[in-house]
Length: 313
Length: 257
Image (tube, rainbow over all chains, first blue to last red; front, side):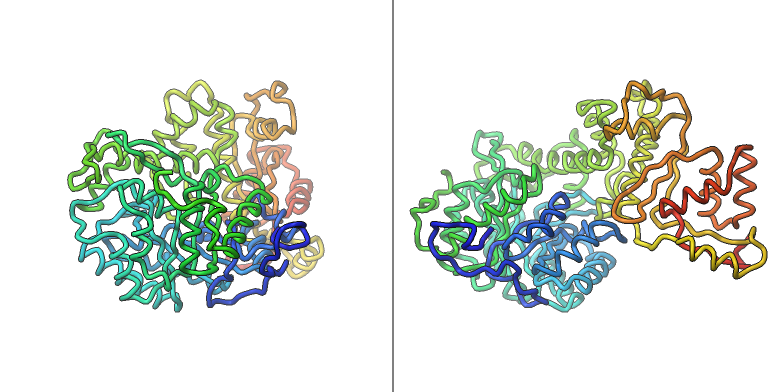
């Protein structure tokens, strides 16, 4: 819980109402949020944790009825919602799926999320859906196409969307610009916002031998509408170099907390999602992890709380 | 490099790594492509395992995941909504040679798939006795009455004891007491928040299937009675009403058969 009464002895914090004001678009509150998991539906309604918002994967709610809609509707009455897509396939070489946009529009009209976000990635080819976020080359043709797709999404959904930086494991020989330059140009041309996944920054920078702080410095941080934090799994590539896998199955790593702190020092308090999609722990455990994000938002200039960021720590 | 080449390589582990991919340290990109290959296949196997937990328990996790890995490569999702995934799984299990020693496995999978469909089906208020009474009094030929099933309703007819097997894996009964060779028919319905799995008496499955096809009450009952001489219409109607499997009763001249 993020309420002072439940945390005796800790320093004063910004007031987080136990029942945050319901937002109807216009951005998420600058507090931590957690992913809403079906196994936590009843717990959320019974305990009403003091959390800034809940996030759901849009595609999980593209069903006709049943408990998912029942509980999301009730929980939405008490919390702002972030609608996060994983299947729109903005990075596709083909056309955007208009039927999928229609389904998103139905969800947005029904649940009035404070934010809609998607990934710089592709996930379908032809009729086949791969259920993974696949990489795109950073070249002029891809840039033009991604911008067209983001334009179309924002036109169809009648709102700004946030575009998330990906975690990647490979690079393309065809790339002519770096990822931060590519994202910056999409944001400049389309007016979309940035969902800065700090874990993805760390994962991709380790995976591609880049400097994470330099990467962040070259992004338009004033466009950040939300931050994601998640766990990863360590692995190695064929040459024995570290390869981090974006697994969303463990607590946030200390290195990512450090990088998050460095980001907050520049952005100030920012809506931050603690992402956990595999091996989901209790709601209380997720809320406790979110509390650490809240603490860091209060004191972004206190690096001693998690040390300074080192990408290979 | 096109997404078509990348996509093809994802589901075919024997295909070479497509050209045009690289790693910053000059390492073989095949090892990095393997991360995507593994993410795709293992996440889809997880999705299948999520939908078919009892099927997995019946054969064990190792066997199930090996079977599912063949399935997901042969039948990758055609929908971006994973709740819809797995329609072909039971038929696939039927034809999966290494699973032939568990003859009821595919029917248990059919039951589990029906449960997931029911879970996410459209909501509708069950028919009440009062509503049924009003409907019955609004026409004079009772046999022409049409009963509409709840959108979550489905029937799984099996030569095996699918309901008992499934129930035993919910901890509701002792698995060793189940004779798998006894035929059972399951009614799956979600009148509220919980999916119900009920064993149907003789003829009732045929009756429900006929109702779902738009057959009127009298003809549906006749079809059921032809299949099971002891078909008991009042008790089956009471069972369906009690579990919210009916939502509407109406006389419809154009639709009655």
